[in-house]
Length: 135
Image (cartoon, rainbow, N blue to C red):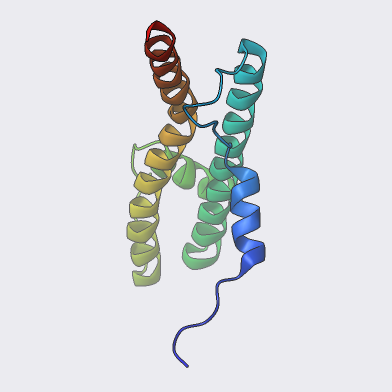
């Protein structure tokens, strides 16, 4: 059989990491609850950045044979959107650097979405709440 059943534990972990939003028919959350939601979203974003930074450091250290400090510098520069520092000496390192650069762009978009999504949801929820109260 080519299709495997979905791993429910993995979905539970993703649901636990991502913030749960209320339906538009529900009342708007308090500012304290919003601050907790923003802190939760920010913590998930920081976790994603740290895991990505570690993966980049490990790849640079193992594939290019550079020191941990140079691995940190290259991974941090790529995650920050600046690009790698120095020349990449071997083919495996070049392939890793290219793939990590593509991955870093996706991480940038994911972190931006994680941080901005609660703000957009809160603003839209307040807008719908105000419209529903007028009717």
